[in-house]
Length: 147
Ligand code: RB5
Image (cartoon, helix red, strand yellow):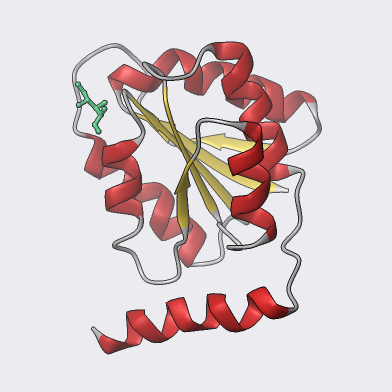
């Protein structure tokens, strides 16, 4: 799968862990930054990833900041993006299976490196179930077109 990943300074270490884990599974992982500990603004990185996913340049996006909250707020402002803030593998599987989420958000100050990797692997490894969920996801797009 083509995956784009990004973080701010507060999510840098977890992002590296997750990128390594997903690449080791054979995914094409592109890191859009940030690349060092200098303080940056999470909306810039959330929007980079959201634009790539919404534009079809990647199937899945992963965003990490301190809590994951700022990243998820910004990513969900982008049309076509369904970003899910996950703290458990169960949430990650459900976000894909029921909500067809295409961006995973996590907080480095919330989940440890082992759990973060497991959440990302569960997210990427789960397919959308379709069926009754298709209609509901379509209604999300309908809300976007009200704007
Ligand atoms: C940075 O200090 C922090 O505010 C940011 O990483 C994130 O947690 C925002 O939602």
